[in-house]
Image (cartoon, rainbow over all chains, first blue to last red):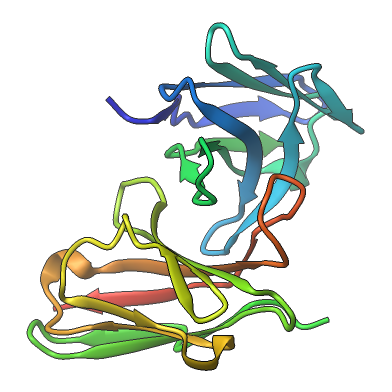
Length: 110
Length: 115
């Protein structure tokens, strides 16, 4: 079983749509949670950290459910520029390494 | 401020040859990480330096891989001898400090193809 599981997609949505991505992680000792964005043939870039209380950054909302070991990302009012791969990332325990999911590809069309 | 840089951007070598990848972290970042993504798989951690010391090398696949960070500045990752399964994108990342408050900034990666 992978440490971080994501639906690979692709998710094809029209501009203005709301789209939700889900992720589960297996290590209950995980301490930090993130969503990264990766454009085609580019490096991953931090989109947002995910906190237990849930957090929002503009059109993006992230939520964490520690009991279910589940992380989500909601994107409202999708833009063409949101097309990318969204990586669910977890930092297990006291280690500094990041554990990545395979990513969910989003395609926003006009 | 310059970001993380990696050299070369692409490398094509034959099986059995040696390749050395270089990473220059963001200036002042003591923490340097190597990751790689092989085709169709997730990005996986290789190792973590704090300054010149290896803090965690649990992700290094085997002894054909050697990472160094002499002087605590740039780092090199040598693959010797390269095998077909080593093909992939090798990312370097750096962070100012450790902990969730400190973002790991990724370089553009080196795309390694072993033929």
